[in-house]
Image (tube, one colour):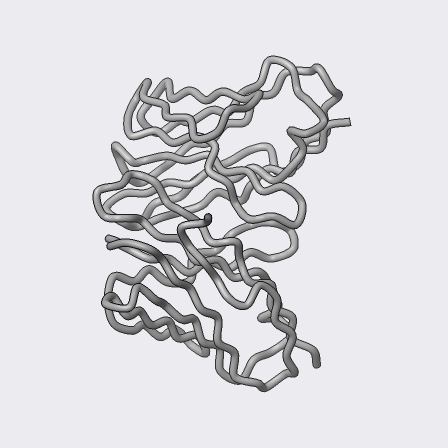
Amino acid sequence: SQTIHQWPATLVQPVGSPLSLECTVEGTSNPNLYWYRQAAGRGLQLLFYSVGIGQISSEVPQNLSASRPQDRQFILSSKKLLLSDSGFYLCACERNTEAFFGQGTRLTVV
Amino acid sequence: KNEVEQSPQNLTAQEGEFITINCSYSVGISALHWLQQHPGGGIVSLFMLSSGKKKHGRLIATINIQEKHSSLHITASHPRDSAVYICAVMYQGAQKLVFGQGTRLTINP
């Protein structure tokens, strides 16, 4: 069965520091992968999605970037965090209309 | 305008009540998901639908393709059902899941 590993679960980072959140998928190949962000009290907003290695689509302009160096690895990064980057980040995987979700990372930028 | 609309945004009910949460979308879909998000943030997939109806325990999900509408029902609701319920769709020909804003459900004992 498919599983998603997303880490870390919580993270506190100072403004201006870099960020790297990693998501890996098991049990499937060539999935579509997604990064979502949920600001406090808001719904999930799509940040990036990827349909294959090295293929990244960005949904909203922002301070973040994403990379997919391997088929089942999706990384969310920032060179310099802003206070507004705080939120809950969720990795998701979709394959043949079935969707699976990571446990999320709660990021607090201080 | 969000392409996936959920209603209500917030719902408070007493233990034992029958709960209905609605989801509407705008164009043809290949699949619709109902998800549950607890206060810690983790998301659990409840159902995936492309037609008809599915049941799991006290949860029932239905979808009407013609009306572009889905409902999630909870029978004999319990305080542990308190969570945010999210509808997400995969549009036909698209490659991304689109989420609704979620419905915050609170069941009081």
